[in-house]
Length: 630
Ligand code: WT7
Image (spheres, rainbow, N blue to C red):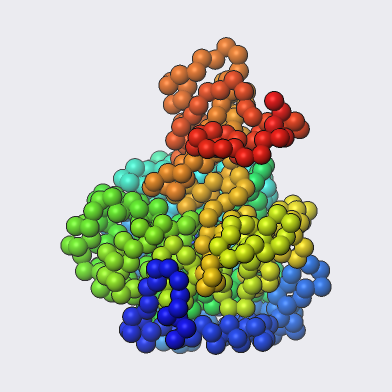
């Protein structure tokens, strides 16, 4: 076997994994996808339901505005729910949910379909129509899933805002999407405390003027302000006769928008990544099935929040498209004890567990004894996502959590890609720290500044050279920025924003972002998000934010601040600024360190050179500084 010749540290699949996994031989698929790339994707699409078959698999006549399955008609919500109702899956568990306090709720596919229809009828009664944007701002409760599926059912475009974001982030996202409807929970539980989501939303609604109706889902039961004529309780609306369990589904064209999801970019305001019903459906369906290897009897737990792409694709759409049983937990990882997660893996017999390196590193520090007291033998597949996983954490995950029998599927992808792009199949040899190779047929490369592929093991810009079904279609209402951001550095190549190297065996090693995106505990933030929150504080004249390596979080934020005259630097102002940034962007954006400075390094054209700040903070050579102002 040529596999024996792989270089470096390699972990081979166990016999059991080989027997069980749905894809035994990557090479066969690589060859097939190379010979007939479109036919290869078409075969996945055929496993789903279409009201009308596509005329063309890929329309690339207007690059980079690629279209997939054109002429086809479908609805992703129908494929997630209705499609299963005529089979035994009607009575199968679609969702198991546990609250932070330990309350369990379950829903069969039959019931999830009903709840979705009821939610859809509520939205319809608010006048929501095909193409309308609906902002959803909630914690991890079943209603966030039914709200998303309800939007999809009636053709509305959902825009989920992560419940960990705060006033300004929510305002921007509501405004940019011009949502008329906001679905919000009264609050969310986090580590025994309540996050006052409705209160945050009220403040955001004072800044953003587009919302006409607010649907409020009761979660905590705390008193909240309800504005007459604008705010209505979901539990009241859903009891009106019109909110019955029958809701006509909207037939969608493959290229009709399904959702927008905001993500931080290099500069300026967040970007609204747009995904569609057809292509996104096919991509998440196929990768859930073959990379995460979701099978009929499996229970899958993706620990992400539905407010991020990982939750969209691998809590909601991918698993439900496959008729799987999804587990979702409301709370945080280590609360009240570091065994909270392991307890639930044991209790519910989770088979596929998908989490982030930052969580793994967090658990490592509590030691193995918290894990050893639980029986985790149901686990079959372990997944990792969000940032590079250091080999030490990888091995701990493999040895201690997986008991040396579960492959670690390190999945590289982005909000923009919609689906996993680089990952090993469970049947493949693994190298700790590398995600392996791209999905069959997808060509990726590492290029130098001039666009030439760098040699083996050389660092460069990671690009994607082949279109794929679940690719970002555009930035909502901003085609120009879409082209500039992703398609202008190299011809016909999608620029990922990451640096990477490819080893002699074709395994890709991600190094990190090369732009001003900062990954903090796997969360994606932009320097610009933090800087604009900083300067909205009355004491601040100018600010710069950078990411610096952090043992647990991967990166931590460090901010450099120039004060307006009359303000004194000091601990009090540091605390105030941190609280202010937390209030505006969200707690995840609070800088670890704030430094007061008199000057920021800038180019002659006035752009802050964050690279120089970073080099200074790390005590390394800043490289070429010829463009520095002085
Ligand atoms: C960025 C995308 C879509 C997954 C959740 C994050 C980094 C993601 C990995 C990985 C190394 C990774 C990249 C990428 N990233 N997964 N397995 N190994 N880096 O989505 O918020 O859009 O962030 O996350 O830097 O560009 P996102």
